[in-house]
Image 1 (tube, rainbow, N blue to C red):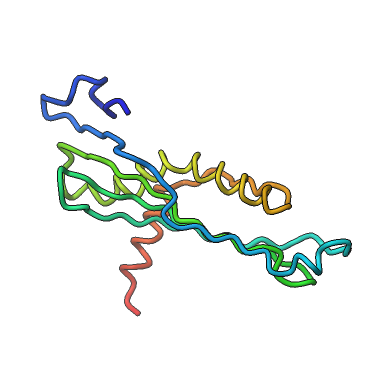
Image 2 (cartoon, rainbow, N blue to C red; image 1 turned 90 degrees about the vertical axis):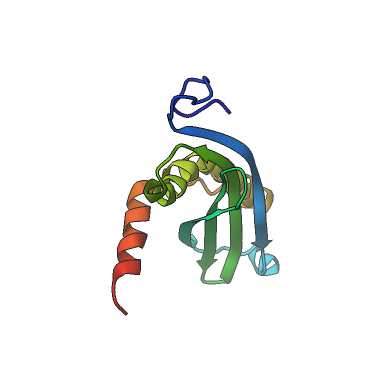
Length: 157
């Protein structure tokens, strides 16, 4: 991947440099527990509950950091659980010349934003391969999600 802000010059002048070292499925589970009830049955439209969160960590070497999107979708109707999908999709990034106080937000917002299109396609493909219409995820405002999570963490219990 080309440098994020240096135009590929290598960032020698102290500019922020972002390189994607890799992206991957870290964890994946798809359950279709009531398929025997669904075949030939007329069910109502499913209720789909979706949860998405982001985490990040320092990998300890060469300015490498991991950004993870944790996704969970559970579809249910009157017959029970239609499907239950859990995916953790990750990326490893090399980040240079970014002030430490900005790193957490950068990993939770910018890096997650880069991963999201791949997660979106994976979710659509898995639900389709599971025998259902593809679940197409709406765009996510990762900056708002990050701020919301920070405010929740700051609240006293």
